[in-house]
Amino acid sequence: MKLVIGNKNYSSWSLRPWLALRVAGIAFEEQRIPLDEPDSKARMLAVSPAGRVPVLIDGSTVIWDSLAICEYAAERFPSSGLWPSDPLLRAKARSISAEMHSGYSGLRNAMPMNCRGRHPGKGQTPAALADIARIVELWSDALAASGGPFLFGSFTIADAFHAPVVSRFVTHAVPLPALCQRYVDTVQALPAMVEWNAAGAIESEWVAADEPYADPPAAA
Image 1: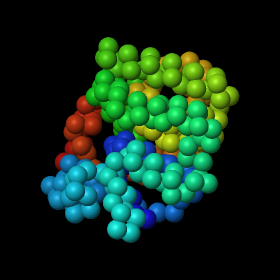
Image 2 (image 1 turned 90 degrees about the vertical axis):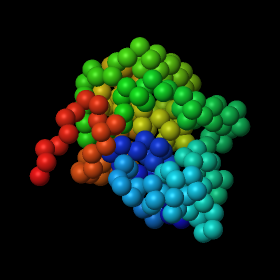
Image 3 (image 1 turned 90 degrees about the horizontal axis):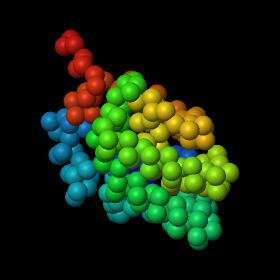
């Protein structure tokens, strides 16, 4: 299988399936297409009719949505544990993942994912703070019910979908209750997450829309 992703520094959508596959031990080839380059759209259209990343290519099968990719992996590799085995918990994990997939626009807009950036206190708009309050509620309930260290005890797609939120909270130094901060620390300490963050930190590309709180690099 091949997973086509965007910049590791910026692409929260790419992080989700990449992390899910990596933590589950599912082998894949990685292809990176930097975002916001003159040829980015053409390169994406060459691998997906949607012209966006991430894209999973498995033989003649092409899947171009982060949640669909994770669902496909969970079905193709049923022993991976990407969803909870209990049907009721699985339904809740799907709900949590879908809420992340379609919501939290206030947080996304005000606090873009940026692995190499550190902008404490920035982006605290009313909409972002409302999203943060909802995420704290969701995490607190799930962690209290499961006992941690992940939302449903062991790592699942729900954690992969919240990994970009973890990254945003680190970049913007969002204050959290102790239970939620432990969850952030747990996700950040995953070897796959450490690998992703290290790669993102040394990327040289600059996407202005994802850098609202930093000055562009000086011209060489």
